[in-house]
Image (cartoon, rainbow, N blue to C red; front, top):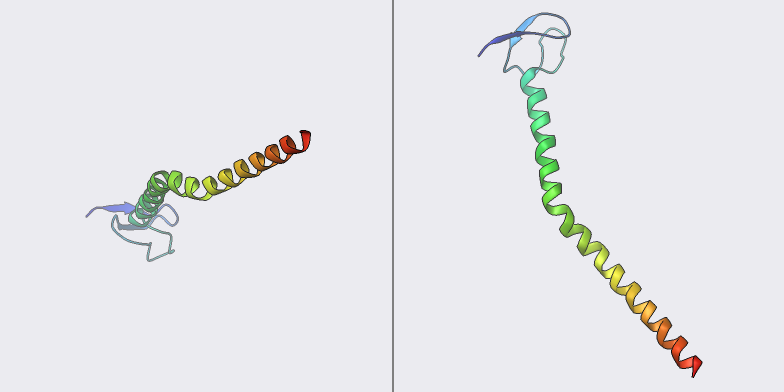
Length: 80
């Protein structure tokens, strides 16, 4: 455990402190944990995102294909 200087008030605090006891500014450990959480969420979204997008968009594409095919069928039967 090392002591670091608070960026807000200048008081020495533990590097593992969640917040400065003097001014309440989040400590180094809290900021690092928040950044790690953001990176974890980004990684999960990168892994899961394509599957979710495909599950949501594929039925729409299938429905659009069906409607275009139906329109072409109707247009073809009316031309004869």
